[in-house]
Image (cartoon, rainbow, N blue to C red):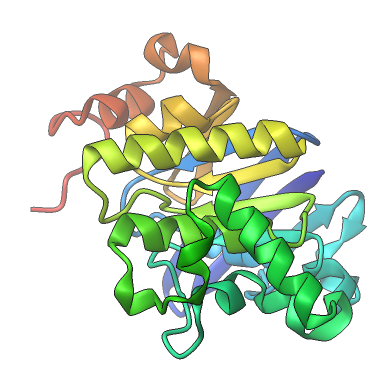
Length: 248
């Protein structure tokens, strides 16, 4: 479904991506791990076409992302943003139905509201939440609303950007379980970027580690603990000593 071939991206002298090669199969849940500032978000934005690589090719279902018609291309994606990214001035149901109220996916307002309430229920929120505003919700509830919005238009591909950031361990576990259930239920292709190892183990079919601008290691989640790769081993166990230099 998603293929990156020798993708490079630099910002001035800062070479962020230096030849990324990665394949994500249809229906697969791929989790990209790596330290802060290693380029995970740049990689995600490049797949979405928000950042143009300096060289290399990114394909979605065999089509070059650079030549895709934008509206049709973006309609295939859903995204859960790191900070929730809810619109404070809109009630919850309009946040969830945001894409269903405008553009090529536009639905009648009654239908859009009904879909929003259905998706809220899918992520464990009662219909009474629909008319509240984001400021009236806890952080965990806001994250669930963001997840409901990500799946509202039944996307083929869902991106999760640090899905458990800012959540306590129990709520993080709840969100991880919801993500896994929904991805499997929808048969969606999923790409997650995170450094939370509990999320990795809960969500991933496969894992790819981004380090020094390349995919250092990739393989099934079951191979994480016996990969034989010193970079991956240091990262997943949080060791200060190893081939990855800690910034002091």
